[in-house]
Length: 311
Image (cartoon, rainbow, N blue to C red; front, top):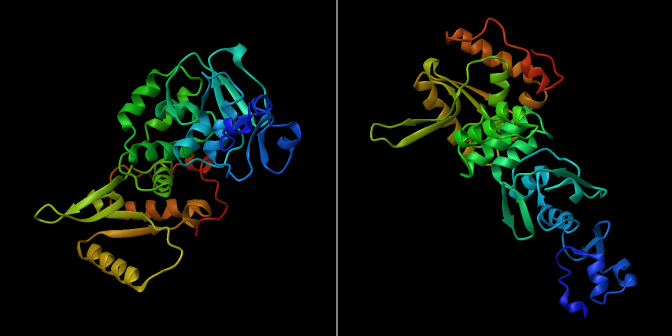
């Protein structure tokens, strides 16, 4: 056996490298780096989420699959930074204990294939994430999957309704909030902040059309009955004068149509969510929207623990 027959640009087991003629001294040297105990890769290769997931699977039976946060990272689904890789096996006897890897057991096989092995399919991954992340982050993941065209909100709800996973209850609640055509995670967060405060749910990505049917404007979140728009603006500064002028013209057109626009930036979600809730609540009350509570609900506080006081 010789070294060339082992592809060291992908994760490989130490035992396999030794069998191919690579010495223990070489494996400890600068040419290779460990990913997990017993699994290495060539030092020149960047260790990406895909590489880490593939490396974790090298330590298990070929039927094992990347799941939970590992599956989400492989699929590019936005989730919080979470430690450890996650591998699911089909029987308790297949479990292995490795530092940096959490092992799960399941008797169902809702999986798909990637170049390094198997991973949870989109629906299953959503339910699995309910074990690891909160309600809002899970809705962010669901909105993203729908936006990518992987699943519809209705299909996600149906899957969660029949799931026997221990996190299915939490997944069912989150799936009920997943919507189509959401443009960004921050728009999801803003919508969830308002909904969890007990305000009527705004329409997502409403389109205003000209007489010929052409879409002339889109609103992130809107309450059409009282002509209120709530938008997330992720810009921290105006990068081009043209963009600034275009934005001013757009808002002037909105004003001309009798709409009121309320803009929220990142600090209004992470730092001062209470102020954002009160801004929207007061505007909707002033415009007479049906269903606006006498005061906002406090449920949002558990999910948006901003520390700034309302102004």
